[in-house]
Image (cartoon, rainbow, N blue to C red):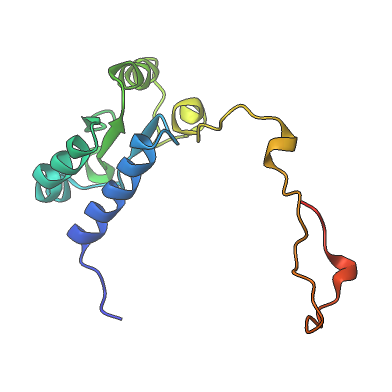
Length: 142
């Protein structure tokens, strides 16, 4: 298998994260960590990908981090309110570089509110038939 170049890898990740946010699975996604040079290399195409999904973006420069260790990323969100909540956490001194915990609510998957019964499989796990030699004693209805 031919190795993937960094530009293609980053743009692929941004595409996947944009699909998650556009599909309503996440409120906020962060691109992979980028150097300034990486950001400049992917910026135009990344913004195009994000905007084609009907989303907004914000370039996080992490200027509070030491320059020699600094990484940047692109925030991907559906709503300006989400970017504002992220920036409010940053203004309070929290940084995803140090810990993602303060950002969990924004970064977590959005799960639909359903009862446990709605998620359970009600049929048999295995098809039964004369030629089925699998041990059915361990099948579960879940």
